Length: 152
Image 1 (cartoon, rainbow, N blue to C red):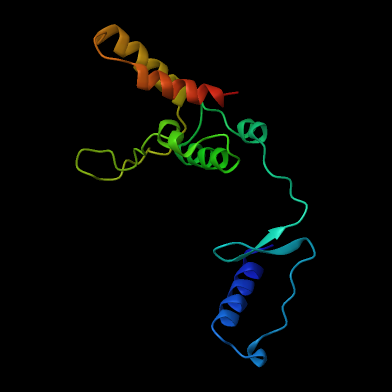
Image 2 (cartoon, rainbow, N blue to C red; image 1 turned 120 degrees about the vertical axis):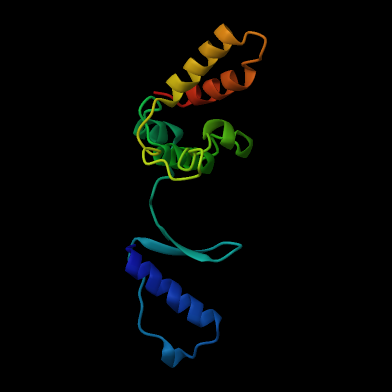
């Protein structure tokens, strides 16, 4: 369903919930491939016949060795939606954004450039083991193992 049709539907739904009279409605029909479903929070329009996304389908779209932060965020949300990533693993899989990581709080212009998120963790583990062997790398290794589960 296109955006204007969905917003028109939502507008009509909002008016019906707020007591609009039948003469206030315009004729509106859902597209043939759409179905109306009721959820606990609100009604929504879904396309009938769409296959739910699979983990393999999600993983095939992304390369964790060359991925932008916004794509990594989209991948994380998609993996959570299909149940492949637990809520408790969210922050281990998706590091904090570096968009505002500069000392003075200004925006980092290159924050969304593609990066090698697996390589970054491998380098951090190697560095920590070489220069700070008295510190544990368990957290970094857990993050790496989690990313490797979904690497191509």
